Amino acid sequence: MAGLGLVWMVGPGMARQGRLGASWLGTARYGKLGSDWQARKPRRMRRGLFQQGDTMSVQAELEQVREANNGVLRPEDVVKFAKDKNTSLHSHFTWDDTEAAKQHRLWEARTVIRCSVTVAPSDNKEFRTYVSLKSDRGEEGGGYRSTVEVLSRKESRDQLLKEALEELEGFEKRYRALAELSGVFAASRKAQNSFKQQLAEVGD
Image 1 (cartoon, rainbow, N blue to C red):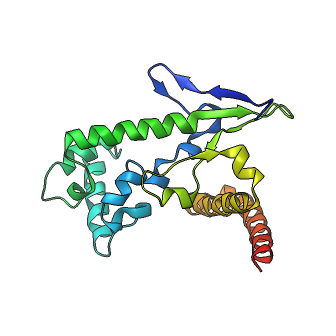
Image 2: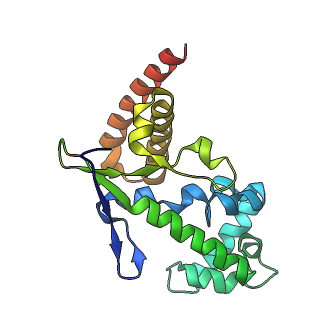
């Protein structure tokens, strides 16, 4: 770690992502309140998935909330709507305020960790100081590892590369409706296939 400068990107009273962008802070990747919360919720919520039959009812309710608020879907309006125990949305929230407060602080801790960046002396560019690997997220409490250490070990580096490729695929799914990005997606898929082939060859 010698020669690497640590930078903590924070704002008044809260952490912010700085130049790393919201993609690294994507809470969707961790569920509503992180891996601890995921472990206690029904499987239908893992990775943003719903049980068959639940998806349409939840989406219908979200549309109902959006249409009732001038076409804009706001989290606070969703929470207000979901307080009704008869809604499909209700079961997807933590209504115990003590537990919700605890999990929110854990989410804040994760945000602070993700906001820590390191400046590489070679090119003066920033990168995340810590990364969360899928293997660690599967453990109770999750956890983060030093990016430098992860990249220095072949096994963990390959794991991080595999997860990065999965995120690229997720990015394309999210924005594939934008025809203007078709060229970007084509180049991305080409790079993904090349890296996947390399990983497969290494695995053999």
